[in-house]
Image (cartoon, rainbow, N blue to C red; front, side, top):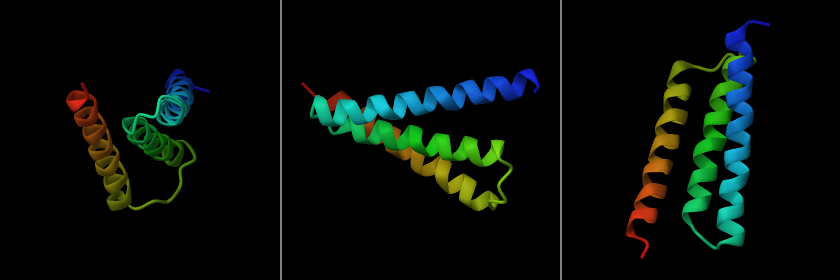
Length: 84
């Protein structure tokens, strides 16, 4: 296994942790932005796992996943920004 493969696996594991923390923020702290953080990193995880597992996913789907993830994080950041 190459160093780049190991780093990609570590990054994917970190994305899983961040997604779980996002759910905890949403459920335990009652913060809506937690759901969007969780969604963002769950989509990043799907994106990375599809690449790691060499799944035959069209480029348009990869682009859509990335776009939705970015929009989700943008909305989460807006919710954080407007919070008092």
